[in-house]
Amino acid sequence: MHNNISTLFANMWQDYVQITPSAKRIHELLAGEENSPEIVNDHVAFRTFNLEKTNLDKLAAHFLALGYEEKGQYNFKAKKLDAKHFEHPDTTKPKVFISQLRVEELSEGAQKIIQGLVEQMSEEVVTADNFLYSGRQWQLSSEEYQALISESEYAGWLAAWGFRANHFTVSVNHLNNSDSLEQVNTLLKEAGFVLNTVGGEIKGGESVFLAQSSTMADKIALAFSDTSLTIPSCFYEFAQRYAMPDGELYQGFVEASADKIFESTNAK
Ligand code: OOG
Ligand code: NI
Image (cartoon, rainbow, N blue to C red; front, side, top):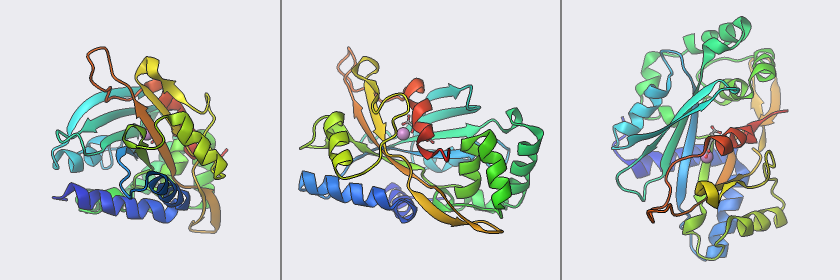
């Protein structure tokens, strides 16, 4: 497994911007505004199926091996997901949010498709150094993709894109020149980027110690076994954290906000 956090994140970032060109442009825009190339990441996020071979623990193992520790747990009943977040003792390292789809809660048909995909994976892939930026590990037809999407946007996205960061997150607290999330959103909209407006442009706020916004995922042509489709890839998130009564910045996530952030990759 990886022995260097910086290298891992650099590799994940390269994989991510390759299918998320708007994230690269936004990163440059913000770095320019800040007059510095240093944009601090609040967190990155991963998605997986809760099957034995691919479950959340399998992804988490890569981070635990690098010194990350499990912190919060989350449940998204309607989306059939559960999630955990991880932090590193070195708080300059990005947090990690990993969710997994409870496959057994989907229809028989969708379960069959997903099992068929995961069966195509070798066990070794999951423990390999590059697993967290290895992408799709199976053949997938456009018909299977559409069938999954119609039942679970999450399942369809994961079947299409596989194992990789689905978003990076700019820490607005660490921006010097734009000190509020509203200002960042205004800058992005003026530059023509499209924000996720599900439940409002800003999810959460000072009352829950975390305010978040995100772009809608880029639309990218992706090859399926039968044809190519232009579908949502990854998105970019912006997070502003607030101090709790004890004076410490809140480090967790907020279920009601996360529920809306997931929808940044919706195809419909
Ligand atoms: C994760 C959505 C939740 C957050 O910051 O609340 C999230 C995902 O889209 O996979 O990232
Ligand atoms: Ni996020």
